[in-house]
Image (cartoon, rainbow, N blue to C red; front, top):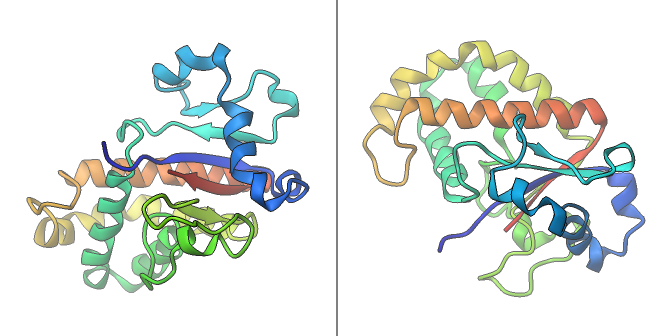
Length: 206
């Protein structure tokens, strides 16, 4: 089995009150409840978000991607695809997409690995290189900029079709189709927009 991705949006103020070494477990415990097992097995709710039973006092929610079956590899492949095509697109689109994707599924500098840093100290650093503590950390102050960037590029995704066909289509380790690539981008757009509306951050756990 490959690496999985469990994505949460969370209230940083709540998490800040939890000891650093317990924050990952707090996220897991908040949403994984026996009474919700059927929803997990069914892929979550219609809008992708799975909330704890008492949604009114919830401080986090899990997002279930519709096309990845919980795997991390589609996100990694999409990030590699963006790295392949970014120099072939309009500068406006490139700048906005860079802002949107960096730290989520693409890193301008491969050394920027939250699994090694613990998200700037907000989460504990991984002690085992084969079992990262976190896959991505996007603090609440960074989310609104990503949502705004998504708003600038969403209507221009079609401009990526030809570069994708030239650099990615048919290549192993890249999304199977342009539609699969843009569908995943749209889901990330929905995730960042929802998190920004709440002033929450994003955390991806393996």
